Image 1 (tube, rainbow, N blue to C red):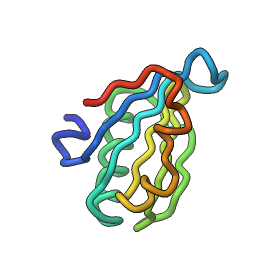
Image 2 (image 1 turned 180 degrees about the vertical axis):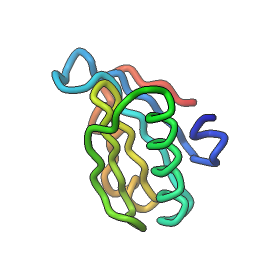
Image 3 (image 1 turned 60 degrees about the horizontal axis):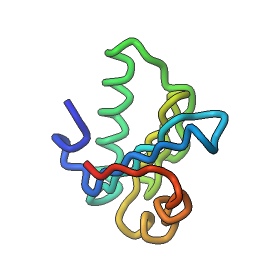
Length: 101
């Protein structure tokens, strides 16, 4: 299963290995609303655990507009559309390789 199958939108992967010592990739996606964001968070955490990996940290509460899931080498950022427009992480890391899915 993938975030795309769970109807996450505008999925972007940013390779930050050359500029960040604590993680390798950011995965950024947009949820339709806070409830959808919560569903995506639960999906990611379940898939990570099912595949033998650990969630090191989760930032953001239930029904939040931005939730961060840190799995060491990969950090997933799940935003609502408004929050993603506000924080603009892709622009912050624009000089790093990015792939849109």
